[in-house]
Amino acid sequence: MDLPPPNFHCLRERAELLEVIGVSARLNTLNGTTGEGLSLNVSERRQVAEEWVTKGRNKLDQVVIHVGALSLKESQELAKHAAEIGADGIAVIAPFFLKPWNKDVLVNFLKEVAAAAPALPFYYYHIPALTGVKIRAEELLDGIQEKIPTFQGLKFSDTDLLDFGQCVDQNRQRQFAFLFGVDETGFLCFRMHMVNHGCPNMVSQDVTSTYNYLGKKTNQMLEAFERKDFSSALNCQFCIQRFINFVTKQGFGVSQTKAIMTLVSGIPMGPPRLPLQKASREFTDNAKAKLKSLDFLSCTD
Image (cartoon, rainbow, N blue to C red; front, side, top):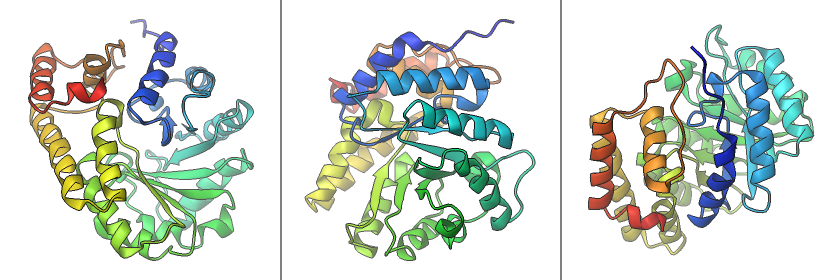
């Protein structure tokens, strides 16, 4: 069975869409979960990275390339390539087959990847539900810049708000970026960041899959936060939760995310790669009806 190649032709349209819906000013991670980066071979990942850096120029403020892999050598190769093409940073997940069993082993792996691109900001992608690596982010951050001088922060894709809160609380003096990756609890994390920290030295952003099609609604939540209008921010979060709750009950994953992106944007995202299966027509129809009922389709205009 021949696998379809990545659809490079749609990347410029994707970059333009992200600019239109107000996501361009945020850190954009490529070749990650939604982009099925780990289902691509090294050559394809290099091509996708090159296209995003080129097509995103003057449209996306920051293009960070995910270079995580099971092979350290492949991660290093992708990190070096990201530096060569002018990416703004690199991100890495923990290796998830032969797993690091403690913090020191994980940091040593990350250190070797970061060293392949010593001029690029380095981010750790913490997503234990998929990697199975349960090392707490709070523990990982302790002393990490002594080992990885280019370390800038982490994408936190987990529901353990105690861990996230301690990351924020124990790193008040450091200019780490905490990029939150769980769409349905963004309000709680931004509220925690504001109340528990309140300091401009740390950046906190949402970097989530629904940004691809609900970016305007999420930005409305963030703008309400900036105005300290927490009631409006919470209403935006509840609205996002209604949609996520609905599609989760239908069966929601990367394939369904791509189907919704196609539905909302009109840009063909193509089928997922095996073992993922294409979203059903029933799911797409139900998701479209829910988007309309929540007035989300107008949020992409």
